[in-house]
Length: 340
Image (cartoon, rainbow, N blue to C red; front, top):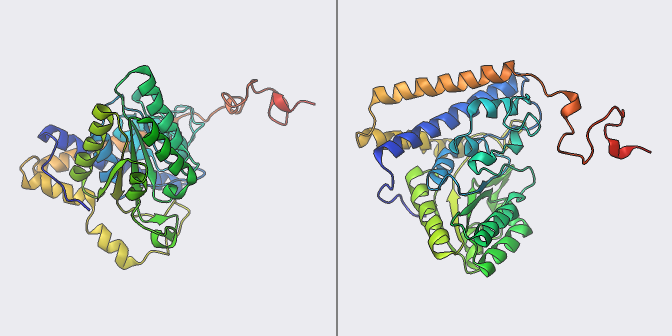
């Protein structure tokens, strides 16, 4: 595992990265509160602990580089600049949500920011990113497609197929394996014969390596180099980010499999705490600056929650829009397609 090289970010960029990491953490904590209050239904997957991997990745990309993710994607949307109000409203299933309240927590999308969504199907967004990379190459553009997926998804056959296509066709794509070491509650050593995942891409002539996913500057450096290879050399790259989520797989997971000692060991390397020490030590931010920033971020998150709670529910008549070829009608079975 590599260590962080010299920062590839200016002081202003580092301050922005720290604010975004803090925003993701506070947003996720507020989402947890909303779920416990019964205002978020269905599933809710939190990325608390993975902020460095998310922000380090997105900060290394251009705004027009297409990005896909998994169902744990609130942080990616926030890092891409999506409106916290619209994201929280989507989590609450409100019509004011970023997808009109139809997608919910697992299916955020913001095409205006080249965020092509989160997906509930494990590994399902990887071939979509391959298609986005192929489209960029076909059109003669210099965008780099990036797909973030977990080590559990890396065991899906479609990922190997995508490695092969990317290597065969010289596609401008970066595969990011966010290895949080547990597929739901199953530890990686019980699910994979070899628990290093980046060599799998190397088997398809894709340059690949592994970095510390809890180090935001190390992630930024690694993804910057991977994106450079894809953009300038027209070759795919793969980076494995070793990280840890502090919560269970989802809000419905009691998280009893992992030991308290293991959790404490990883929480001692909290990416927000370690990056804060860097900023203070380098004189990039002072204690008062950090306190003011935290207050501002908390206000943003509280405002997003208030906005979402006040938003209108999605009208029943709108629920099937963009799902069926024919619009919703008065058929009690729900769709014009099921008429006798």
